[in-house]
Image 1 (cartoon, rainbow, N blue to C red):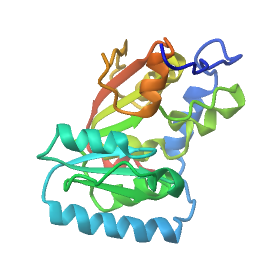
Image 2 (image 1 turned 180 degrees about the vertical axis):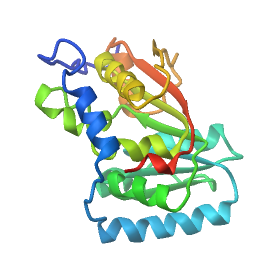
Image 3 (image 1 turned 60 degrees about the vertical axis):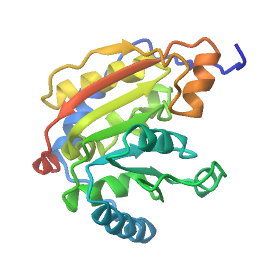
Length: 226
């Protein structure tokens, strides 16, 4: 082992007791947060790029430094891969030229997802790789499955894949999908076998942590957004 990453610790012993209520609220109450101008401009550029690509979309949400976007583009040369992250510092790290079928976008995901849904985007695959777990029980509303933007994630559809080193995060995500009317997906152990998609995946695996993966095929359903 070459890494020494700490495991996620939380006083929350199981799925959050407020999860069902949070999901129901998100599905039934419109979220009226204004969309930031900088994300709107970034989305317009991404929209133009995607139209010029003319290929099915893979969306790498929260792509960090963009290594996962590069890897996905190399694995799927016949797909257009867009990586989105809000940190300019992460996106500007030097990792070589992007493949022609990849684009990195600096934007706020909660705005970008809603704009993508409004523009009719239908990602073939949608990745959420090692999102911030926000492990305190008081932080449920910051986890993507407890956030008001959750209906937009669902409504985009496609093959959704979520990976985490905190099994409870994915257990909650699976239950949130069930609360939203989807079949309960299975959470499985994930062994990259050295084929790491993100720096976090490498760090956690080399620290001896168990990695987890959830996959769900979702219909494109814009009407899910209240």
